Image 1 (tube, one colour):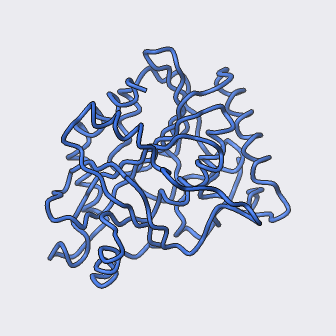
Image 2 (tube, one colour; image 1 turned 180 degrees about the vertical axis):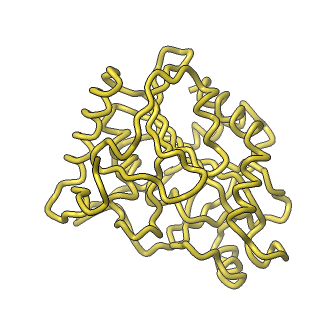
Image 3 (cartoon, rainbow, N blue to C red; image 1 turned 45 degrees about the vertical axis):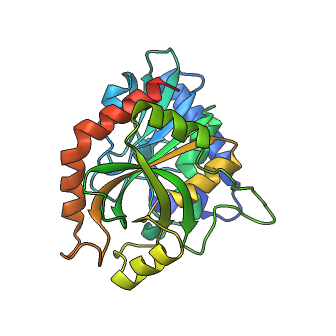
Length: 277
């Protein structure tokens, strides 16, 4: 079993794409599935979607695959699942997200995305639980991510690597999602570093620069997915109104509870979107 001390992604001399390729080979060996078509990272509140999209044929503890480690956050199950979709396609469900605030480095944050691409996945669905700036969004509201603002001051790209991020969150996939549920709203996601919640002033800054959603994941993963040539759908579950918009103190327990309450609706929605891919 790999430990944080032996993770090859921590060695700057290691090519992270080589590690992703080896991880994909290990997943193929463990599952007997040569390639996957779509990958889903299931954030807080979204986990049960894995049970609805198809038949799980294999479940792997993520830390048994090179480059992965056990998740540090409640609400993430710490497994990789190979799911046979009704269409006959294969989905790789990632329940082991490494967050930027864990201080393991960006390579580990985006390793799951790069591994998914190495398994053959052409579509990457990134989900999260997040704070909403729009007052019309009540806790439990699913929202499409139309764009993002990366406030981590970091990037998964290394060296002189220039990647176009126009239409990063696929217009085609957002329109497909709206064809499933026409009530879906969308907004710009702001990734803060975390793990502390944003201050009311920071939320107002995000609003002033065009943000509608605040959270601590997704943006860096989306950049890596685009670099890998994947088409990206991003979705946030609004678990609370952001600091200063909501008048009561924020708590992680609130996030977990909102996710549990919204889970039947949002997971069914995501399953219907996956079926339409």
